[in-house]
Length: 500
Image 1 (tube, helix red, strand yellow):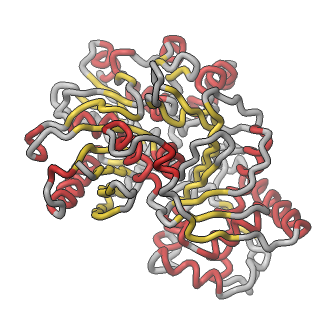
Image 2 (image 1 turned 180 degrees about the horizontal axis):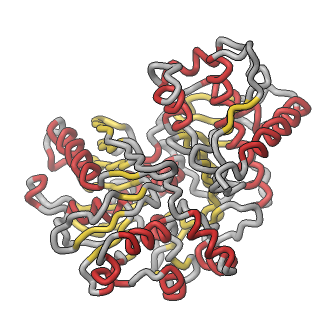
Image 3 (image 1 turned 45 degrees about the vertical axis):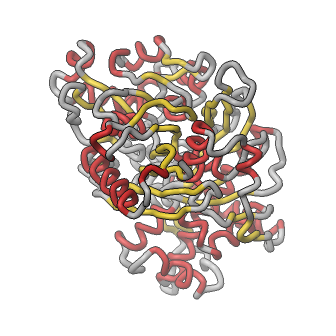
């Protein structure tokens, strides 16, 4: 029992990665699945396709693993907020999953805000009132699928984020569970009681019978159905993808921060065992919950989080929407072929703006173009847009925490883009540190599962495995940085409120 099989169910693909006791990935498999856009601002996934692609990559890794008995536990990390509603009897979804990027419930959120509920929701959940989170998505499904609300009240249906959906299928319906990191992203979970909140459920008209049981992020919380993989494998962790990446980056102490460059960009700062209320439109969220050595009850670690909706997805748009690159890997060379953006700015508000602005009606804007603007300038503007959005949330996080952050640990696919990382260091004014293992989302989930089954004895063991690949030192003069940020903020103003 020397390996952990981590399931990393993301926004565009399902992955399975096998990690050894040294924290190294020894086998991996990945499959993309369809992105569904029924209307402008709507984003959906086929939940059955998510399950099938996840099962396929598990079986692919298992086929390459000898012996299968070497797997001590399965770890699960997932795209968060994406909402699935299914039939408890048949296991069939009632509709496509509504993805975290989906904006169909902006009006519902606006109505709740106008009714004066924002302060209550933020105080209880640590979240801003936004269509990003699961609660209004679930309410939309109950209101728009004929008979769904009555069936939910009779206990015939189950709601879950993707972690719950995977566990349901891995256990053949024997376990309906989630962990606090995922529960804290629903608008239905109280950060202070660490339980589903009756007042919030009533406000959003969500029947309690739908909800999964909340279990620790690290612990043997279920076992797979033996017929799936030839034996019952323990499920040792459940954790949202960004919290998993924070754990995988060994940000175990308060004041340590990481940024993940995935479909979106997500910065998390460890704030310790008490939630910190944001004054700058950031999110307060559960990082993870686990039983630590000599503790009688699970300890909860909290984080401040900033969510940028369009990170790597901006590069996908260059590829799939504009067709100016054939693959994402080409963007660095194209952007580097010009020395600057020639005063061209891209605001990638294709699904609104997240932290620290939270404008669901903002839309994508490309501004400052002249006849001399080329696709290289647009590519460089896209990379700059990612780094400029991160710089804004980095500044907000320093204000909220009162901590002058000395560096930023980075991971995710786009962190391998050296030009982007240098731009990021320049716009932040502090070093950007990339680790040797950038698969930190899957690795963090694997570490939590490994701690649950004794493969690692403590976070100190894990911290020794983290090592630096490259440090990017800032090279931009402070006056130039300030001028750059000011111009960026002008571009942001042009994008705000466009869909009103």
